[in-house]
Length: 174
Figure 1: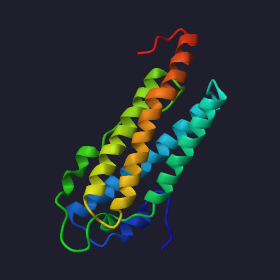
Figure 2: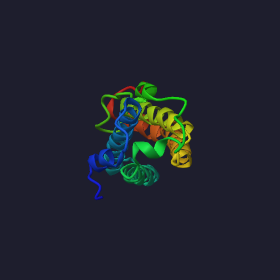
Figure 3: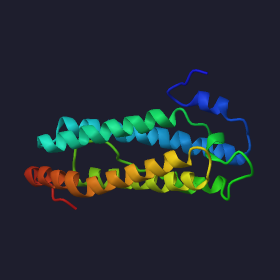
């Protein structure tokens, strides 16, 4: 089955139509969209980064997010749960689908804070999905670790770059 950019082929692969499967499919769609959103944000910041080091870091982070996006396109909700039995959790996955507004624009302290919130939301979601114990559990443990690394990078290297930009523009870092 050919995959579409919006994950509609994923929905066709999901065998069950129950609430749990629908919630998990929604979580995958959310994560896929978030990864694309963050990738585009980092690519935009890369173009205006103040140093070669910041450009390199943002390019790496953008490429990583693109890889996450591509991987998520190939996962179905049925792969998130064990083949036998049901997971300990189900539709409550919606608590992890956090809308982070203002995830666009120039590299500012506020934008970095929004990116951190988005990455932290993905950490929580991926940790939850890994805990379901399906055949993709190891992948989601790895994604959790990568997103945690992105949070740490944003809070250190990129945040320092944003503070430098804000200082030069008369905007006070928050």
